[in-house]
Length: 177
Image (cartoon, rainbow, N blue to C red; front, side, top):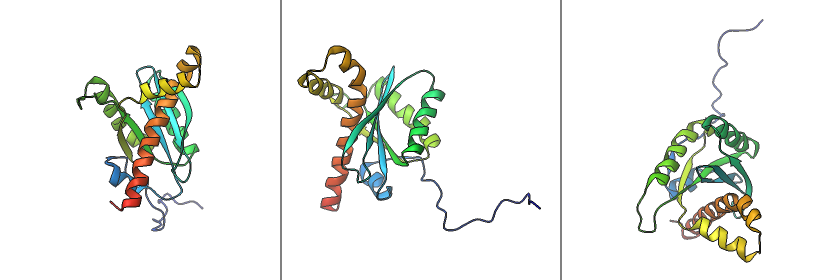
């Protein structure tokens, strides 16, 4: 015989972390040990993605999502969050060299606000100044063809965004602040 009543609440089951945008100290503080992060470079045509290792030491390129509609893009990103048991998202925030924010920064904030509740993980907005330029420079130094650079530039920018956040969190851990 089945019951129509919901199962009793189990106090040992923790609810999913709030999908909120946090500063780096708060973000680092809510992450469980041994969990991965995904870095996201939000572009108009693509979402470049990077994945951290379990110790959150090294970021590696994951994939590039060709943007279509938000629902499809979000479904793929949420599937990757679940598949890799990701504890948080680090989303690049394109701030101008003078510290100003423009339409691209607003688009990144909007993406974060929309994806947060769907992914159910905390979000860190990370200053991505010059990451695409740095990715391009590294690919040129590696003698990557123009075609190859176009294929991997967004994923590499996401890797640099995520690595910057990982390095900062590690530095916070060492200094205790």
